[in-house]
Amino acid sequence: MLRAMTTTLIIVLSVAVAAALTWVVRRREIAAADRPTRCAHVLDTVFKDGSGNIADTVLLSRLMEYRDECIGDAAYADQARRLMLNIGQPDSARAFIDDAERHHAFASDELKAQRAWVDLAAAHIAWTDGNEARANELLASAVSAANELRAKWPEWSPPYRILEEAGRAAWKSSTTDQSLDYLQLERRVRGRVLSGAFVRDLGDAEAQAYTFVLLLVGMLALCAGVSGLLDMREMTRMSTSLIASATPGYVELKGVLRQRPGSSGVIGPHSHAQGVWYQLERRSGLRGASTSYEQSAETFLMRDASGDAIVEPHGMTVHTRHTTSTSGGRGVGSTRRTIERMLEDGDDVYVLGELVVSISPGGATERRLRVAEDGRQLLVSTFGEEQLAFLARLWIWSGAIAFVLALVVLAWAYHQRFQVIVMPGLLR
Image 1: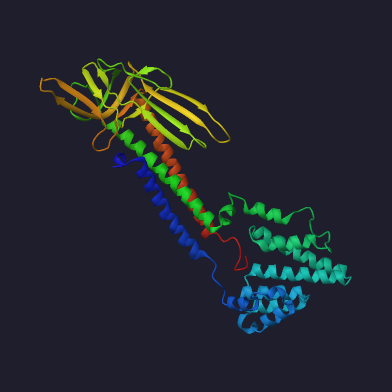
Image 2: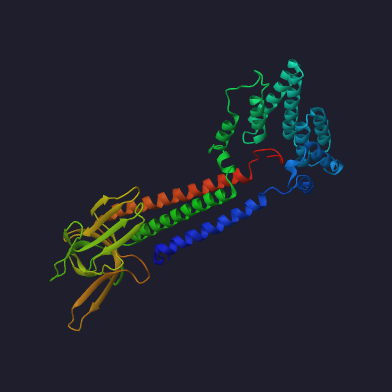
């Protein structure tokens, strides 16, 4: 039963479930990772260590040795186009891209981006040759294509790279909007949460961390909701008994707290008030990270019109109106907080607990209230049954809402990350 589980076990269970499902997401991340293209080995061979010191014409010549084999490979065709533009051959690049199109190397929008790069390079050459009209025409074509792609695929990098290059070139024309920072614009797009871009732009480790945290919060919320449900169930299924006539076992009682005869009660170490029970909670360290508890162990009485029962406070759950606290701190982020909870003589209380009846050799009947052997709580509350029921309903609804929200957010994030197509093909 959940009642018999300690808080530590509940946390361990929640962490275990969250970790297991995070592992599932990790497997999905691995399955969704980009696979090497069929000509990846060619690119690795041509651009091996030291290729930065080799002329682009030599690198292009090496690539062209594999043209027949790899013309239909998008990564290969993209790299060949880059080298052709680097050495000032936009016409050759355009013809190569046309050939790659016939071999179905690119998706349609990838093809549009490839041709925009070619137009941009051709515009630069036309401008250098003094053909301003042709340069403006080609530049306008490249910018128009990039803007169309940016509108259709807001998270795809190539359109922003094209627009950024068009805007900062020495031969830039009024066709481009010089007031825009396209790199900043791309960063803003990738930071959008509601559009799902934020989720899709997370790294593998970040995605797993968010998954774990959401699952852990959801599991803890579910446990809180179930705990509230059990509290409500215990209160609603039981009727209030009188102490003298109550059947031994788990009971619901209402009465008044009293000191035992001959006892002087307890003194609250913080408030110095007199009562029948206290608990002192001390929080210290960075943001209250260290917490210690101290509470009285002296028994006390619960009394109603029919008789008395001795309350054994070990493991008791208390809801009380008598709470005092003080706070202080030394240094940034360091806090010290003391919270004292008390039960006082004369408090009206609502009690759930296990009633044990024993008869002494002299014939006297002794009744005791304690934590149930099956783990059910000994609850002593200065708040009434209706107030406790309201608190239980609050836990139920809060836990249920938080759990459902966690599942909804996870389902939405999973859909956004693994189902939504946000950019075309391989050239990301």
